[in-house]
Length: 115
Image (cartoon, rainbow, N blue to C red; front, side):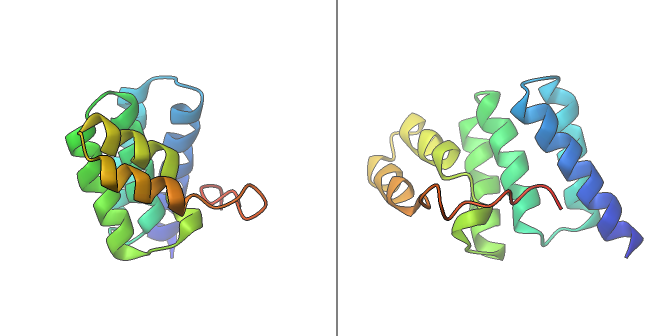
């Protein structure tokens, strides 16, 4: 249980750094620590993907978005806007359109990163 709780702390810290665009390298390290402790948590992969997207590392981001989708296909656990941007940057226009359609309405959104 402690490992999973610690993983959540790492992920939440990484997500906060990402959201405030502060020290994305540190955010990337924290997100990887979360994944190392709990390698089947979809939102941890999503956090790392979003950080990579912010750093312009689109191919790497796509790998982590795909892992997030593999572990849990939940509209509220994926940052669809960031995924759409990754697809667009990689010239994957049909996939970008799919990601755009998958975005939940604002009334459906929950704060999936904070536990």
